[in-house]
Length: 214
Image (cartoon, rainbow, N blue to C red; front, side, top):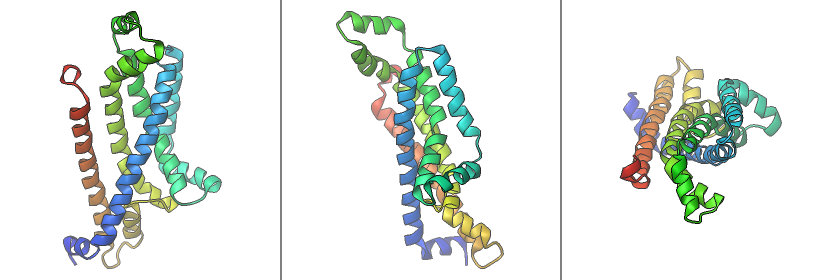
């Protein structure tokens, strides 16, 4: 059986797994963005705090995926939960770093001008600084999403969501009928989803970033 025949005959299952894969990655990216932007806001005015936050998120990224999932499984069990926790943690570094860079790069004169027209600290942050830092933050989210698209394959080790189950099943059945097709179908699915998601981020950037600050 050719690869395309394999995909056609199992399209319903593969499409469901693809949806679960991209949906899980998007949700974990959003969770990482909420946490990462929050951390960035808290520390961007402090060089020491920024260095610590970046170092900690970098340290998380150095932990092998299998090792992190192996540490989480005894605590939270198998399934979606350890996968979501691991992916969210892995997605933090680009977002934390880009949030700090984006907010730190805002011209102090702009913030002072906003204060001069009567804006409070919260107003300056939400209506001026975060808007100017948005291109950097969105880039961090885009990088995180692309990383998580690949890392999510390892989530199958913890009985997680997505196309990883196809890849792992194909590899563990190496040599049997359609094992190669199964692994290739999962791998190609991840590549296609990554490209589509990246195109969506480009569209979001065009729609949400004014031409003057692109």
